[in-house]
Amino acid sequence: MRQTIHAALVAALLAGAFAGCEPERSADAAGAEEGPAVVVTVHPIASLMRMVAGPAARITELLPAGVNPATYDPTPLAAREVASARLVVRVGGAVDDWVAGMVEDADVPVVVLTQGMHLIGATDQPGTGNPHVWLDPILVRDTLLPRMLEALEGVAPDSAEGLRRRAGAVADSLTALDATIRTILSGIKSRDFVASHAAWNYFAARYGLVQVGVLHPSPGQELGARELATLVNDARRMHAAGVIAEPQLGEAGVQALATELKLPVEIADPLGATDLPDRSSYFDLMRYNAHAFARALGAG
Image (tube, rainbow, N blue to C red; front, top):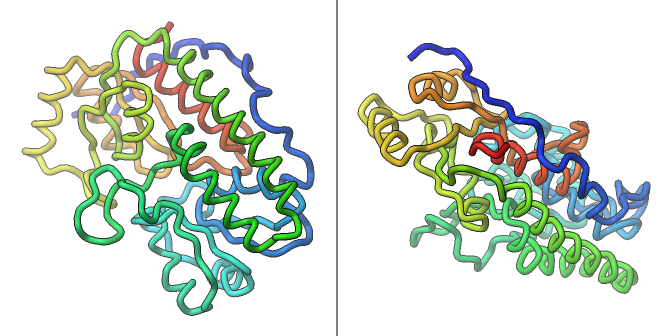
């Protein structure tokens, strides 16, 4: 396989048409200077919790931008953030297992947002299953958001009225975001795609897409020659339209696979970051990803 890029970039759909669908992000919502410290493991959850918290709590996120959660080695600064927190909020599963030891050492209360949920691919072993639940905005609205609100009310009970009001606004915005994503994806010519790794199961299930297979079946591991040949055959048989890469993972293997399949590569980002203008909030991130899938799947 040659390592070249076959990019088929189509003009972004509905650019900016829904830019105002999320709650206004005031200086307070971007992170209160005072209030109890709440540490959150990953950016998308931290972004949502800032919107709900407003001035009632100070939200800090741990995972640095562009870092693969599977290979992240927490820094001493991260350990200090956890030790000084009133609460740690994590997703659960492999995406933030790295925080478990710090929480235990610091003896800090922790909320695991996916606890008790039926995760895709879960087995009888605790902590198994796909943890990327935040990539389904309706699942966020109906399951994760109430748990975030409850966690914040626990550390800031005097601010409960404001927390509930802001959570209601976020819930309405998640409903609007779902409609936006459906509009962005309405022009796709195919629903089948190949992914760098299985971050997109919940997104695909919500929007009727089909993940044919993944290049990285587990963190830090690529397919062997036989499994890769099977993936190529499956992608051809199902007429996959595009390959989804991720900024946290190496691109060489993805580009080589796309070259072999003669398919375009688009970068979608399951995590985002505060300092990325087009992915700085949860809502920005999800619109960014919807446009990436639309281009990969042939929308025009």
